[in-house]
Length: 132
Image (cartoon, rainbow, N blue to C red; front, side, top):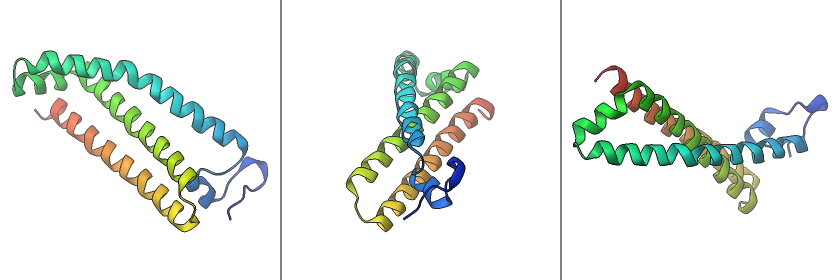
């Protein structure tokens, strides 16, 4: 079992598993709430903007997404979305998976998958913004 070492520092295993001082749980909770709040206007903006842009077809939609403000807002949406998803799935895994080795493996896979999916999405947006 991983324990926090003195001074609020944690072992590498503790950092991956999200264990540590009680303050870590509060940080996790606040981060999940803040990403949820950020996702509301970002998602509404994205859906409304994409619906408007889609009226003109694929080319119009990709041109809209390639605009600087649209690209910045979409990248912000992707970062908030995948971070929020990772935090939520981590809580589910920690609450319902009882085998420590499996729990650790799943948390690592979720973190890596969230990072990879966010990176792919950001790359696609930046490709539209700078290459197209």
